[in-house]
Image 1 (cartoon, one colour):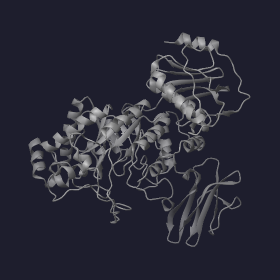
Image 2 (cartoon, helix red, strand yellow; image 1 turned 90 degrees about the vertical axis):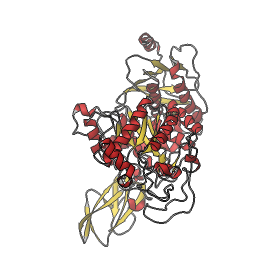
Image 3 (tube, helix red, strand yellow; image 1 turned 30 degrees about the vertical axis):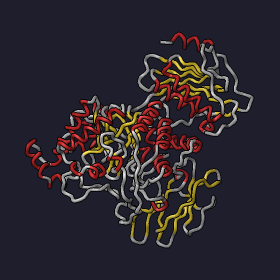
Image 4 (cartoon, helix red, strand yellow; image 1 turned 180 degrees about the vertical axis):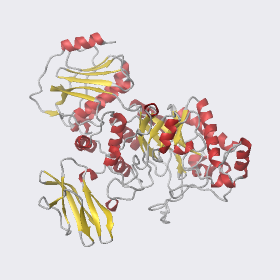
Length: 612
């Protein structure tokens, strides 16, 4: 299909030079994240000006062409005309071509034209994300640059994803984030070819989704009377009510916004645990062992869980009825994690149900609960995915597993021929420290550095080649106990999510040095998009390792490429003339390690220090 047209274009293309005029020039070699599968550089460049025509041979591409124009309008103050007749040369051509897999594309930049070939809208969209990254970083600015032309270096790029599921999670229950921020979150995901947004909507600390049949869930369940300050065990509270929820109208708006960017939103409705916000509204859904139920005011795991009785299933089925109307995703996340069995062990109904159904214990009761809900969700034409714990007591027949408790759950599910998304903690948990905890705000644990996330291989080697096929993707998880603001979310998520996105998209061999060189340039794009990422990339990370009571062994590293580390032991600020870090060394109790990274004789990043 369209091959004759492609040949005609090749013959008709006129070479145009790239000299003269006030233009902004893209980089060559390219610094694209995630790395495309195959890139062939070529001499010359194509110049995009306000007169460059856009041609689409299928209306499927019109929205993506419009998004390209939207970016140009913001960055340059002008957009490209959509050609009504086929331009013989000098344009940007979107072409539908047979034989391409889902999300696959060819991007061909030649001096006389840019060709985007794909078999679906997603492929064309991802080609545009690559094209934008080939342009100067200023193209990501929302302030017009008064640019006469954007020069795109010539290349032939053939690209397709490694995994079909490339996800990013956001917990909006522990802290709430408005729709405008979620749109920005999705925009940044899409730039990195991340195609699943896992939206955590119900928890012990708040119910965030409007359910028309049960308005009390958002009238009351959205609220907690106060919030713990610091960690879950501090015992100090702020005394301020906290809430927030999404209307169904807002949900539909966000679902449509994401779909335009080829992002599928997967809602998560927690069951049978992490249900305290719902139980506070409907105590009859619990095992009835407490005198009082209220939305949780601190973090952690709570014994108050859904009781597996008919009232509970009626409630959850009603909720699912509205969820499937709001979210077209073929997958519904049902949680399934961290469900204490304390209440079930003490509950006469639960114990009677275990005997009636011939179950072995409370773990099999959880499996029975999940399988009952799976049957209902399957009847709605959808499938379930849940955290590792849905494996306990036996996995539901059609369930997918999101493996967060290390790799073991994913390995077990893949061996049972269930599809798996790898999201192991701490490897892919973005709520863990990414730099020295002594100099970072409160986080869940760690540290889990950028390099750790980049080098993690999500397909376990212990699986056979056939079993490895059941690993369908990866996901970065953002739990927000210690992320009360959008700025904090961005700081914790980026640039580490760049590493996860690359593992999800690029199927070639990993190269840490090459990744960091591309990433340093990529940070300039994030700057212009207003993403408040963590800049620890440029800072030395000093670690003290146990040795004897009188000494410690010191290691120092920095992510920024082509940098050297200089250090002192007397508390003074390092200079280019200070000791060069080349290998681990020993310090005593009186010495203070102070280090900074340098490149070309100039310090980059912050000075860091560490005491015994």
